[in-house]
Each structure stands twice: as structure tokens, then as C-alpha cells.
Length: 409
Image (cartoon, rainbow, N blue to C red; front, side):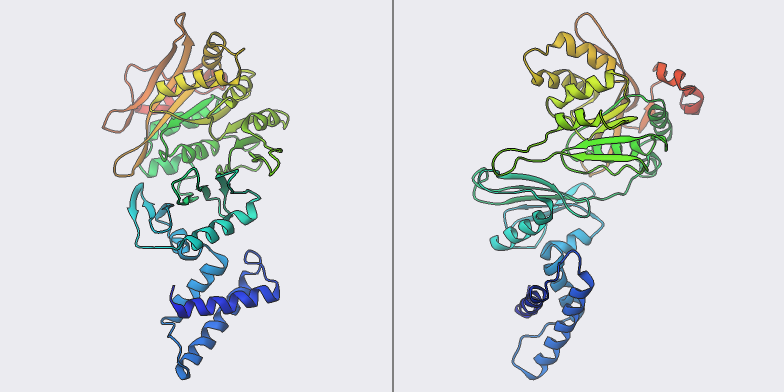
């Protein structure tokens, strides 16, 4: 930012404080102040020894970004092609476009980074200090913020902003983007309609949350959905949605609300469906118990494949306590989950569904049968010729799945 722009920003910032304006609520009034200050400075620079502003529109936008946006990061936030922004310290700012990362030429000061983080956290009621050096929060536009500070880092502030880029909101949109085949989309649509319990797996940035959002769009219009997440990310396009998110502990170390509590509370809110944004720990047990009681649901999990996702779901509930053993968990997983959908991200950034598998019963050796229905072996996601796509819930819902899949079946 040039000295001239900094001077104008200082003048407008003083006026904002004097008039008691709020950057989030008084955008138009602040914009009027910025426009007037830029024009006034430009006229003064013609007769006084002041550095020139250059392009007035560009200068005004920079001042507005500094006052009401994220300053030098705002152009990346406004760019629809940018999916994520992260800072490895003040002088290394990266962005991702189409899943591919690149180092930008932007350089910030340490004070600028701290100011930006404080501004992003101000409306979230979440804190960041030596006793709590990590923070997760949702920004006003739905983007997800994660920050890590010393002493868990080596002197630098690490900031990640995962933008809310709602390119796909329905399964049809995933078909249009090449992430999903038409028969597979029909199968998943039928699975949601029939109330199959679905586990979405994949690595970080593989598109799990996007797929989960698209799956929620297939839920019936009259059904009530309750979601539970660490930080709000899901945006189900339904009328009857109750969204819950976790809460960190306060300064006294009290008041924390975790996912286990949210899942339990969700069951008291008359849900027709329950969706957990991601299971990482013991909340997996509470979700399995809810699904095993006949409540349809969905969730995501980090895993390298459908089989690995199922194995992880058999392991995470053991974290709930010593009284929970594999002899209880494994058959519960087999009885509770119906379908595993695995997502991947290719080297060029493209995201797609690699396999869709039906969950079978657990055998005497403690292994759960898994039948791969759709598989992408390099030529796109296709129905396996020997696979049986049928499921009892399809029949109970009156869905004839093979005619629905057409020639693929």
C-alpha cells in the first residue's frame, strides 16, 4: 500500500471512529467517506507537495478493503477462482486455484497479519492467545478460518482461509463438472431418498464437504435436518434445517461444547435426518448409536479409500472409553452404515468420486464385507458388471434401482 493510500486510510479511519460507524453494518456510509477522502486528497495533491494516489478507483478500493474487508487479502477473497488462501508467516502468502497452489508476490508485515486475524475473529467470539494457540472459525461469507501462533509454531503466524466456493450444490452439478457419472449420481440420489446411511471419505481438499452438501440437496423437502459441525460449513438447500456448531472453552477453561454433545442434543430436536460434518474422535460412537436406532444420517471422514474409511469407523468409537470394545463396535458399524463414497483429488487439482461401495455384514473374523458398486479405474466412474446395486432399503422405499441406472446396470 502506497504512502498516499495509507494517508487516506488514516483519515477515513479517524472519521469512522469519530462517527461511531461499524465496518460490517455501515458499508455505504464508509464508502461515501472513502470516495470523498480520495477526491479531496487528489485535488490537494495538485497544489501541494503530496505523493499522488494514482488511479482513484484502485486507491478507493484499497482503502475500502483495509477498512471493511481483509485489506491486501481482499482481492483474493473477491477472486472466484481462488479456493484457499494461506500464510506461512507474513512474507509467504499462497493461494490455490483449481486445487493447485501458487506463491503470490504479496508481502505483509507481522503487524498486518495480527490486525487481519483480530479483525476476522472479532465477530466470532473465539479467542487466540498463548493458552489457546489454535483457532477455528467461520467468516461472515461462510469461509473457514484456521490460525496457529507461537509457541506451537516456530515464531510465525500460520493462517488458512478456506473460501466458501459454492460451485456445486446438487449432484447434477457434480455430473456437469465431471466429478460424478450420471448413473452414479442417480444411484446416490436414490440412496438418499431411500434413507441409506452414507459415509463420505477422502483426503483433505478432496471435496468431501461439497459432496455432502450435494447429498443433502436430495433429502425430501418435508424432512427436518439437524447438522452438527466443528465450524459451520454445510449449507443444505432445505427449508427445515437446524445447524449446530462446536464452542471452545472460555478463559476459565469452561463452557466447551464438543461434537459428542452436539450429536446427543441433535437427537432431542426431532430430526428426520442427522448429518455430522466430520467425525474424528469419540463422537463417531454417538453417531453410530443414532444411526443404529433407525435415524438416517450422513457424515465425512478422512481416509485413503472406502475400505480404510470403514476400518477407521471401527476404530474411532474405541476412544469413547475402555468399556467400548471391538466386539461391539464392528457389528454396530456393519448394522449402521450402508454406503461408503470415496472422493479423491488428482495431481492437477480435479476432484472426483473414485468408488461407491455397499456395506455388508460383519463376519466371524471381525471383518465387514464391502461390495464395490461403482469404481473409477482410470476411465471414469462406472458400475461394475458383477456388482449387485440392490439394497433392502431401496425395496422398502419402492425404488427399483436397476431400471434407474439404465444401460449402466
